[in-house]
Length: 298
Length: 310
Image (cartoon, rainbow over all chains, first blue to last red; front, side):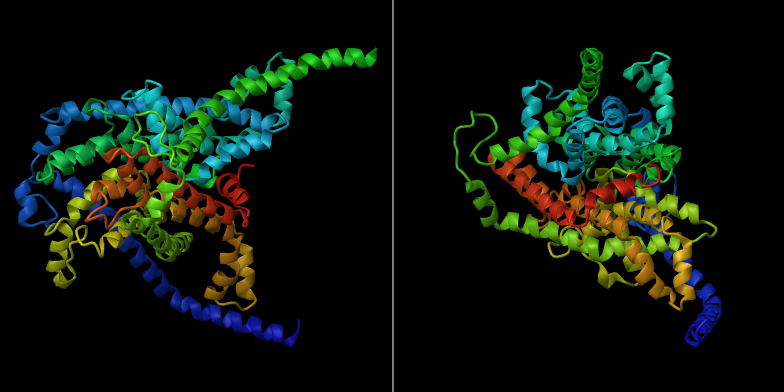
């Protein structure tokens, strides 16, 4: 070791020892920042939940009070089985129908396509694949006006299917991009064995590949559900009656309709986001792994 | 002879291969072309006409809609609002997400809870988030009264009604919703950097900041570029949150390009003009994407999404 190296190594050791002393301060500062950010995330959510248990009088008299005094349950009960229940459940039902159809279509079609992109070499394959990748690179809002005209021409205007199909189409690129490398990673020996047992391409795809790909399929399904469930612009222009609205549209409409009834709007909002929060609690791992590629390998 | 027999055996197999390819790819391709690619081409066509969306497409006016758009002060405000959100995202939101990713990249008690909480807003609907925030930001509501109670009453603003600050308010709420998403992406990127490399830098005498700046940050490049790109594409089509919170107001001060497009198409039935605005949004996106091609974006995207399972 040359003398300068020794010196610099010694310096760095000294610096590290020094930084042990600072370490606690850094940790404390880090915690403080994290707690402040966590608070900022929680405030709107807690405000909405507790606000739904207040009266408008309470909200107006002391907006910064944390706990309701007294607790009022009417706003929530109205949404779940009272005056506003019919509207809420209809919207929840519409959201579920659209999400189920869109996710089934997109995962089904994307699996078939990703299978070919992953395992069959042919001329023009990369060109077609790139066409799908392209879908990730531009803002989907661009297609909205012609989609409105197109869906009207197809006779799907005001039909839940008219929203579900474009939603499925918009979810295709990400689904295919996540599934392809997964399908590729399944060993060729398995395919050979399946073929020797008399499986055709579809037999191998259906009986071997899809069961093995269950973790990846779960991930892409979860991502597609989140996108579809939260979609706003597309349903806004394609659905034309209150009985067809999905939850995000319903919440906006409810908020306009009861613009001065803050507590009722907050209760409706909270009930409307419960499915998303429950879903997040169950599927968080899949969302994160889908977005980061962390554990798609299952 | 042998060649002939080989051919006749190969023939059906090749046909079968192409049949599989077509049967498997065509449904997805058809759905994608009909509902994604075709509408974009349609938008480009409609944009050359003066058209209300109902009559036959006859009144060809060339590029007039584009000229009208850029001559229109309201639309220029919308463009600059989108640019403002993009710039603020790059300068504030991404560095903030990176800082939190670095903080959460170390092991300590409570780490999982923070991560779970920070990412939560990503799964909430943008529209519903906007409605909760607009209730909190109403004059005299939670935000104002909290500021007054802690003695900062002087900071109270008409958060969504003052045209000079409405975009900043919206940016903060957009960041509330999306910083966790970027943080998660960047955390995954950080975890992909082997510990030994930063260790080595520290042993070679780099300070923590230097090691981060000269070693971690360059290695994080691909993830950062994906994060920046997705943030820009998102900012470019900002609609839901703005629509429920301000509808583009006050006096069009918070219009975005997507809001201007929506209003043109559905409020004043100018489908031709609205389509021109759509094409302009598309061109902005295309320029961003092409600029990014230089940095091998496609490999980055695939890498960020699928790096660990290939």
